[in-house]
Image (cartoon, rainbow, N blue to C red; front, side, top):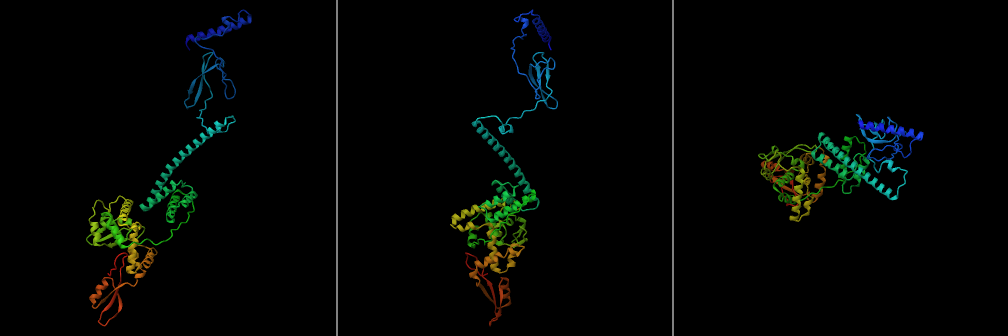
Length: 458
């Protein structure tokens, strides 16, 4: 402390002592300068309240015992705790309070101390407080919902990665991920199985087959996340596929672009799936022998087909920019191009039936024609690559329902020599029986009636 401060302090103490002594002896007048408390220059003396601790003890200066104190800032300890510092207004002693201060939290409208209060407030203020509390609750819920959405997106990414590690097909992974995203967009909590069931059941635009696929997608998600649930049972009702005429198929092939025309021609001649045709490589094509090898999908058997000269020419004219024959960026881009060109042909040819033709329709059409031509279900089974004959029995009913009026249409030939009989057998004719007077033998073969085209005897 400066010397001037000490001198002023001692002078004040001396004046007070003299003032008290003089008043006792009656020697000093009450208006005497010594009887008045000292005043600091340029300051105003004010009365301050007493500072009390939490235990109701009055806070006083430890040096002189005065309760006239100033707050002199905060003191931060090494461990981060802050304590209040005080300055005595009488003796000038600076000290710190022993009890550390509690950090005050920001007051909120929905704090328990604010909501449950015994204070009387006006009705308007109460209503405003409720509105503010509701807004805060909604903001917190929205913030939590955003966090949950970002978290669930990460879960779906992990879900698709787990399916990829389990060797699921790319199309299956993408479809299942899309179905889970559709459930989330409808406000579904994927960790609540009952909520998932309700959301699937409410989808009026989903057919039973799509709902069944959604159940399969969530089954895998529940298995990965360890969720127990009882899946609902949705069954796709069996119905006959649409079978177009050959003229409609040829119109569609002729009216599309060169790459898509070659793609559709391949589907027509081989009845392969769209993914099998899309993944065909140049190394699978042999233009010299006019053969093409098919890598199977969905657990089917591998096949090899002899293609026509027309298809071989179309494939040979395509640019070889990659290992794959068809250079679309994805199978979905190919489908998008097909739908766009099909819509244009519908308007050009004024035939709305073309809208019912999809890539898989070519497979149904070819299988139906093959069974009608051969009447051999095992041949059709091997042609399609099926492992189970139950999947092929559908085409028996299709052929019988479509060609029920043409079962007696045959092409008959008579072979008089062994060489003629050999040629007919090579063409697929069946020997009937019997021998006629001129020495000839009878052979027959069913007419191959393509819908929408003239009858041909092969």
